[in-house]
Amino acid sequence: MLFSKRILKLSESPTLQLNNKINGLLQKGEDVINLTVGEPDYVEPIESSYSAIKAICDHFTHYTNSSGIISLRESICAKLLKENNLAYTPDQIVVSAGGKQALFNAFFVLLNGGEEVLIPTPAWPTYKQQVLLCGGTPVLIPLDESSEFKLTKETLKAFITPRSKILVLNSPSNPTGATYSEEELDDLVSIVEENGLYVISDEIYERLVYSGTYSSPVGINDYMKKHSVLVNGFSKAFGMTGWRIGYTAAPLDISIKIAAFQSQTTASISSISQVAAKYAINNFDKEHLIELKEKRNYLIHQLADTPLKIDVEPGGAFYLFPRVDSVLGNSIYGESIDSVEALCASLLEREHVAITPGSFFDAPNNVRISYAKSMQEICDAAQRIKKYFKEGM
Ligand code: PLP
Image (cartoon, rainbow, N blue to C red; front, side, top):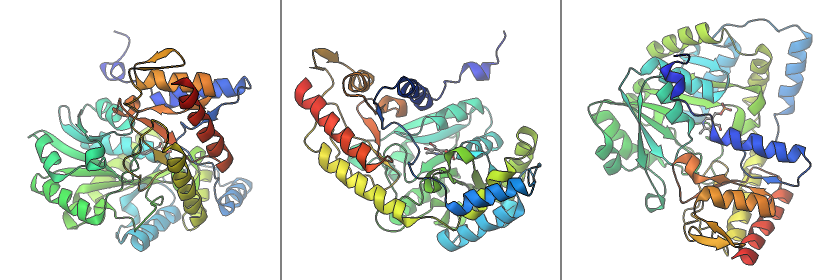
């Protein structure tokens, strides 16, 4: 057989595939408003741009330490201590090509064949695919609006088996925006600890929390600090998706394995991006959060008189995740809408608004709308969506 069994299990990222299709339409000059993207419309801090240009001019352009330049890892430790009250040393940090690689590193070093990874869903589809690639067994825990898309200790307990090894937590969540409070995490951690689980805590949307303060699952107690891999990055908070910088912070024994694995798979990530990240880390612009909150509130208000039902206000990230089941099975503009895929395709064709089917995240009754776009695009998209349902149904 030409291909490995591992690769035959893999599906391409459906969100990136959809995005490629939309980019094709945009290149043809179609007036599409793209609300599928998982990236902000703001850009990196100016300090990062200048420092990256200087790094190039200074020829800081060779391989670096494969775990990342020491000054960036020190800055990450300082950030984790100051903002999350988590004490790490630079040898516990590995800087990777985005949070995506950081997650893959963590799954790869922790998983053996047949070990189960508990993934509360709706979830970012990459978790499941990476677990499969690493030989693990993804166990999806279905959640819905009734628990505000949050895992409870009772539900977690029901899915634990003797093969359970890792629980993935993603707060705030892509795609639901669900953000756990410290009390909710406390509850979950008691079960995690009782069952000797490890946690991979994907904190990539950590800075995008709209009310209250962010609680890292890793900071809940000493057990969590010793049994968690914290994953974070610069893509979402700093608008630096293309620079490809993420990292893991982990107990030293895990970090040593991640560093060894990365040294054989990547050598080191871009030296220039690392310098840019070092200058970004202390320059988060709170204005981004204020603007995103305004966009979130505006869109929730605008969609209130459409069949897109938002029962749970998302507490973080930059997505709405409305239910659309009242539409499914109906016809719109004479076309039968029997799935969320059909609804998204019809909205794209009729009104040139691109949103993501919830089925990509194992939620076939919802759609995901990213509001990390300009206010003008959000306003236009809201008008088009309202028109689509008003005139089509
Ligand atoms: N985790 C979640 C939940 C995400 O949505 C993303 C990106 O969409 C990532 C991790 C990885 O982001 P990056 O690889 O750009 O750091």
